[in-house]
Amino acid sequence: MRTTVGILALCCTATLALAQVDGVNIPDIHSGSPLIVTQTNPTSYGNDTDPSQDPGCGDPCNSGNEMDRMWVDDDGTNLRISITGNLQYNGNCYIIFFDTQTGGQATVNSDPGFDEGPPYAMNGLHNSTFDSGFEPDYAMAFDCFAGNIYVTWYTLEAGVCACVFEGNKAYQGQGFVASGNGDLDVNPDLKVAMDNSNIVGVLGTGDGGGLGDPTDATTGMEALIPLTMIGSPAGGSDIRLWAMLKSGSGDGYISNQALPPYDGLGDEINGVNNSGDPFTRPGYHFDTDPMFDGTQWVTYTLTGGSCVPCDTNCDGSVNGFDIDPLVALLTGGGSPCSPCAGDVNGDGSVNGFDVDGFVAALSGGGC
Image (cartoon, rainbow, N blue to C red; front, side, top):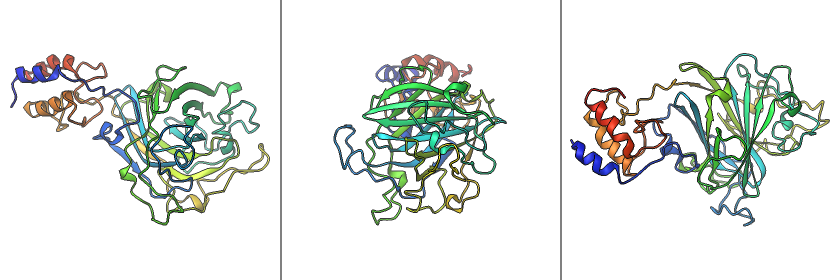
């Protein structure tokens, strides 16, 4: 067992910002996460083979779109959601839906007339019906265009349009791909970042190599969402989530990439779109169309902040066996086993300021 003096000497040499949102090393950030969803379909929207994140580099870089895996965890204040994968710089988008309370939309009611300007992520889903048991109350659309990221928030009320004129569509701001942080220029409380360098994970449907390995991908989109934005659900309560990848335009084109995934769906969805008159278009029917087999939502149980920062090895106890994992976090050589591991003073970082509280906990104090 290391001495307190040894811990103090090491802790002052390095800092690990656990709260940093950058889309890098996503599996490590979510080490110990209770929820991981994995893709089962090769992508129908192109497979990127060049790691450059330069929006002007042209084909073949920035020409692919995929969703490999999704992680979810929380700290009682924020929900952290990450999706490994990549997006083309043409406005294609991820949409994450949140069902956190009663009274959401079973059928999408968006702005079918496209009068409100981009992004048009929800417009192309107008009249679509969600899977049975899923009536989301909120949605976050995230797209990449010309090296920038754009985030829009939707409130999905039953019978009410998710539109600006109803107060249910709100632009959250712009950031930059590979910025190293999740800062947006409108909403400082919402953190969303994208590292768009992924070239591994699932293959393309035309590559002839089957699925590929979605567990190989480690970079992509990362978001830290205040629980107040999804209705302030209480700790211990269940929420339901679903993420999909689609065109950012109003034409309604969707990909075969979703998390949880469509069961056994290959290339046949490519080119399918929710077309026709904007106001009478039929919509997708995720609840009844056999093309969308599988359950298009997953349940996550909120921890309510039950995470114990001094329990750095996540064995349910605070004792001497937590010293080595803490030292590893302080020196940048370890991965947190929980969202709060090592952040004893709750400032979002593991550094020398956490040592006194950790030592006090080992001596019988609280943590």
